[in-house]
Length: 66
Image (cartoon, rainbow, N blue to C red):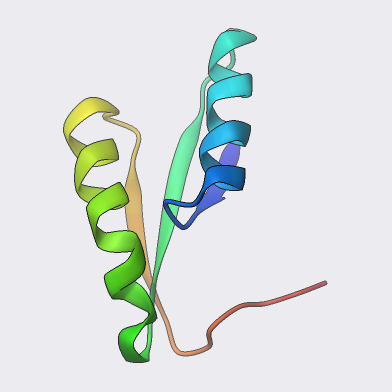
């Protein structure tokens, strides 16, 4: 399962619940344009150090809502 992560409580809760259910979880952090990335960088660094499935992608937009 992929979890779009920002380091915020909602994405961390989703990640933790899936891990507790024994699922293979891949936290994906969006390196957003502008200063938005600075709010997520600490969460990314921690996840990268503790979860090998963590990755980061570059995005030109802030968010995509569907």
